[in-house]
Each structure stands twice: as structure tokens, then as C-alpha cells.
Amino acid sequence: MQEIHFNSIQKFFLDSKIQFKVIGLSKNSYTVASIFEPVENGFYFFMGEELPEKMNNSLILVNKLPNSSKNNNCYLIIDQNIQLIYYKLLSSLFTKYSTGIIKGSVIIHPNAIIGKNVQIDDFSIIGKCIIKENAIIGSHSKVHDNTFIGENTSIGDHSDIGTRGLAWVWDENDSKIIQPQLGGVRIGSNCILASSTIIVRGSLNESTKIGNNTLFAPGCRIGHGTIIGNYVHFANNVITGGNTKIGDYSFVGSSAVFRPKVIIDKNTIIGTGAVVVKNTNSEKLTLMGNPAREFKTKSNPSGMPKPKIN
Image 1 (cartoon, rainbow, N blue to C red):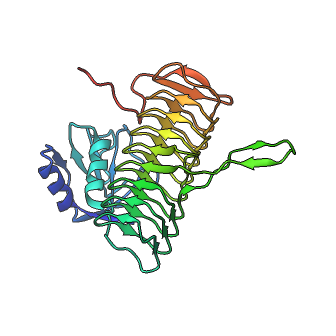
Image 2: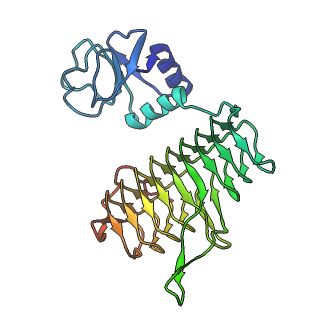
Image 3: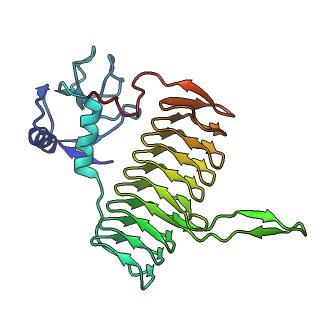
């Protein structure tokens, strides 16, 4: 469990110029905790009316006092989005940045270009590629030739970036003739690609492309020549076929699967387990089912960007 000090929380609010009010007696330190796993002496954000029973002797970030505001809790009341502020606070204190250490067990191609302050963990193999500054490559990962990884991007353990895919045709003797995979991979800046990510390199002269600020949960599999936009989020175990295109700001639920060459407009939500077999007709749709059907996305869905007012 991770400890957080009340003084650190106060300092964050003061530095961020966030006005707050303290109700109750605070303690020196608390345990960072989830309302789904409440503990004594925890630090939470809470948006409901009735506190869980075990949320006692805790520090709770709220917009208003809940109905049951006893239990020896201390409350921090602010008039901003408490989930956003809670995440920003924890990110400021606990985000892990590159150590700049390349472990001795790492194998690096002599012509690889490695930027400043890059961290590469144990038993990884780095091909003839470019890795920009402040990137992190997790342990037991492989980065193949002709790969570009942008600055501040993190690749999780046991990932394979630029691996070979398979495309083939039958010949006159009913044998499969395999097309060589000659392309590369380009990953943007500020991405987090979690453990066991596999990205197949482009075939021929194309590259598989991952946009800036894109997030993959563990186990995603990206087919050759796929193009993923900026600020896209993939939940666990998403699979794309070759040459799929997914627009900016889209959200893809766990275990969704895409047929090759499908084109998805930006601001699309793909439901958990959906099987996407055809292009979308417009932006801001939700796709669900097998095969996936289009539905109008509700107003301001959770996890999607809010509309910008000019």
C-alpha cells in the first residue's frame, strides 16, 4: 500500500491554486485507497451520498459533505472536478519517470540511436531503431529494426515492437507464398503501451503508426500497417487486423476485434468484445455487438473528450 502525507496534499493544492476547506481533524499520513476496497485511514475521492461502511478515520476529497459525514473522517471540500484533481494529485506524487539507466543485460544494435535519459530494463533487445529522450522500455522486450519511439513514451514488460506479421497468397501448386514484412513502426510521444503489447511492422514500404498520447492496457495486438490516431485508449487485449485505421480520441473496450482494413472515425466508442467488420459512417458513434452495430453516442460519455466551444 502507498502512503501519502497530508502536508503533501496541502502543498499540491496551494501550488495549483486550488481553494479548499478542511472539515474535521487531519492526520499526518493516509493510505491511497479505492472506494471499491475501503480501508481504515484511507485517502479517497467520493462523489456519492452515502459513504461505504469501512471508510472510517479517512481523508476524503468531496464537493460536498455526504449524508453520513461522521466516522472520524476528515473532508477536503473543493468546487472542482474531484476525480480529475485526485488523479492529478496522485500523478504529481507517484508517476514513474525514466531513470536513464540501461541495464547491463540489454543488447543494443550498434547503429541504434538512443536519446538522453532513456531507461531500458533487464534482458531487452534493441534493434537498429530510434528511441527518443525519456522513453522507458520494460524488461524482456524486443524493439525491432526500423522502429521509432517518441519522447516520454513507455513500453511495458514482455512487449514486441516491430515483429513480423504474415500475409500470403496461394500459388499454382496450392502452396502459400509469404509476403516479406519490410516496413517499420512509428510510435508517437507521451504514449503508454502496457505489458505484452505486440505491434506488427508494416509490410513493404508502410509503417504501423501509433499516435501521440495513446494508451494501451496490457495484451493489445496491432496488425501490420494499422494507423491509430492521437489520444486513443485501448483497454485490455484489443486486436486489430492489418491496415486498420482508428481515429483520434477513440475508446476501444476490452477484447474488441477489428477486421483488416476497417476505418473508424474519430471520437468513436467501441464496446467490450465488439467485432468490428465495417467502416463507420460518421464521428461520435458507439459500436457494440458481434458483428458490431452503430448506435448514437450519448452526450458527454465518461472517458471521452468534452466538446470544445469556440
